Every structure is written in C-alpha cells, then in structure tokens.
Image (cartoon, rainbow, N blue to C red; front, side, top):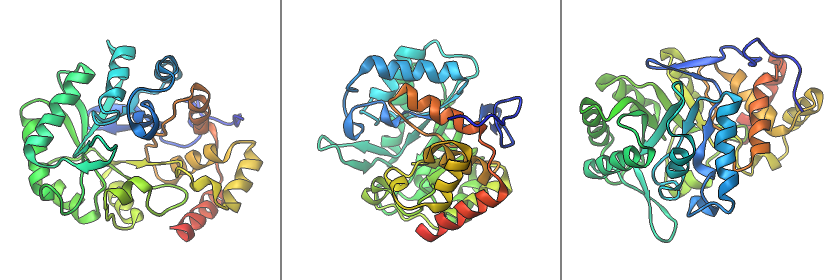
Length: 309
C-alpha cells in the first residue's frame, strides 16, 4: 500500500531528518514499548519475532529507537541489546526515567533523585551503554518530587557523563520554559495523535498536560524535536474519521499510514515513534513516510483531530 511519490531520501515530507543536539536521526523512529508481553509486562509471546522486528527496523533504515528500563520491566532493553549490540554507528537510543512498574503491572512515579539515578544505571546496564544518548524526564505532577528537583537530578547525571542529551515527557509549556532556563532540551515526548484526548496510560498516571498544540508550537519555535507518544491513537482509529479515511482511499493506504503521514506533515519537528511487535506492521509504518498528503488533506484531518480532543 505504498504511495509511489517520495523524495530521494524516501520521505515525501521535508525534512527527512532531525537533529537531537549533535545527533541526527531519520524522522520516523521505532517505539519499543510493544516488544514485551501483554500490558508491557514480561516476555514476548514470540521472542524470535521480537528480534526480527528489531533487525528489520535497522535494515529498513530506522536509526532512532525509544525505550525504557521499565518496559517489561527490563525486557525491551534486553532484547534491544541482545539483538543489536554492538550497535550501528548511527543508531540513537532514547530512554525515559521517572516511572517504574509494580507487581500488579501498574505504572507509578519514580521521580526522587535516588530513583532517577537508579533508573539511569539500569538503562546503562541493560542497554550495554557507557553513556545514554537521550534521556526523557517523564514527569507526573504532585508525586515523588517537584519538576525542578527531578530535572536537577538528571542535569547532575549529565554532568557526570552518564547522559549525553536531556529531553522531557508529559510536560506543559511552563515546564518546558523552566527547563530551558536550566539546561538545553533536545526533545519533548507528549501525547499527540489523530484522535486527541488522553490515553489510558496517561489517565492512569494522572497526567495533566495542557493543549498539545501549545507545546508543539513552543518546540517548533526553538527547533526542539517533538515525539508524539501513542502516535496511532491506540484504539482511536476505530472512531469515525471521514477526512482520514477519504485520504486513505485516495492514496491507497491504510488509515494508520495516513495518521503517521499526517504527523510528519503537521510539523517539521515531529518525530513519530510507532511501536509494533509485527515485522509486517513495521514495514507498513515505515512506508508511511512516502505518502505526500496535500495541504487540504492535512488541514481537514487536523480539524477532525481538534474536534475529537
């Protein structure tokens, strides 16, 4: 279901790459959250297929992977290291700190300085890295530590050489401005997708993130990469989306491919990181970069997204 129109880089929407500080990545990455078993817990149902997905991602040209030690826990990182280490020279691996899992599979904050340091060490160990390329502070208001306390803990880890670049997740515009007063920020990872609204995970975390457009615009103004988590809206694509479905029919593509193409066209700083445990779906997601949506299609889908928020 590929659209034949594409640039020499395979991306129909410019730019084809983004910079995260001194690191350059192609503008469609891979989210490792679905590598573990059901509920992001335990071993995958098909370990060989999980490894195949990772190898195929590199083979396709993806050079940005987003993960966290608490996916599994430890499972995503272990599979990444076992399958891809020694890593390709241009591969950038981003992680997240600020959460942990309980035996009942719930997600809880881990924002105290000692918890963030321990999480950093877990990522270094399980990914077999001496320095973490990019680390997101995934913040949840009112639990564990203040935003500045948690951020300062990561700034200290960066000063110690354990982290190369700092990023943020689940934050609002005020927190972004506060962070930029204290340290360079290379990326923001917030909920943003075709269906709007909060994901189940964000609700469980009691996340209160202001309108996503405001944060995206702030990132655009500063050249900061914006990583939309849950870019395919989980179950949201099953809701009525006339403009999206019409575009899918015109481009002979799936609604999921149009949703990704829309994100790429929505902003030059957008860096979608769709996850999957299927090699076929991975290839379908990667092919979305070749879809050249018209401005009218982009605007119509955006109006639907705002209406559904």
